[in-house]
Length: 283
Ligand code: ADP
Ligand code: NA
Image (cartoon, helix red, strand yellow):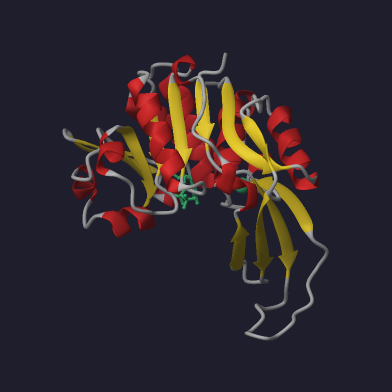
């Protein structure tokens, strides 16, 4: 049985290269469409499985080709997809226009992700890790149910949305990137006032910071050649959950997550870039 349950989105990323972003009412011709498996939930699950975890995804996809693409990617990485429901809506899609300067314009159609239900055999998992591209009430219900069953809960508050205080209080840890942290509180210590037992702030090329009542501890990232940072935060969350499920200390788990996420930025794409333990050069 899986140790890590990921609750979150599964999207098809439909990527097209364009010379420039279209203005209102304008049409711009682009490259062929490249379809890639994505969504924060699916990304996190794939990263966790590659990093050595036994992982299940709680999510929803449509009965369509994009849903099949996502299932193939999940199953190829060894993720248990039995809790991925089939919705009547189309699979979630992210329409991504990429300009030559590397900037993105993204439209997300949540589709089937709106139909995720907070139902799982909670007690079978050591850790639940959630992100917010699925409806907030579903995440709140899942956090409460998992906590009540003694499951450790990690929440990647991405994107930043309002979450009930009792849900924030159940988190161990809350995970945010630097921008999300700044939206939530004026200082790292201020993030603890939201109620979580601990906070992890990811700092891009600088690694991550672990914020607890005993202070702030930094876990620096190795220096790497950056190719594509897409999905680095999701890789981080997945790797973190795996180590926490193994019973490691938070700081140890964060050091591992920093290594996994740093590796992921050295290769193109999100899911295809996530390393196996062998590629990382050992545990
Ligand atoms: P997000 O992708 O959610 O915005 P970050 O940019 O903080 O989050 O990146 C998440 C993690 O990915 C970091 O904690 C770090 O481990 C890794 N990472 C991101 N960018 C780099 C980089 N340029 N060099 C090394 N590691 C990186
Ligand atoms: Na990458």
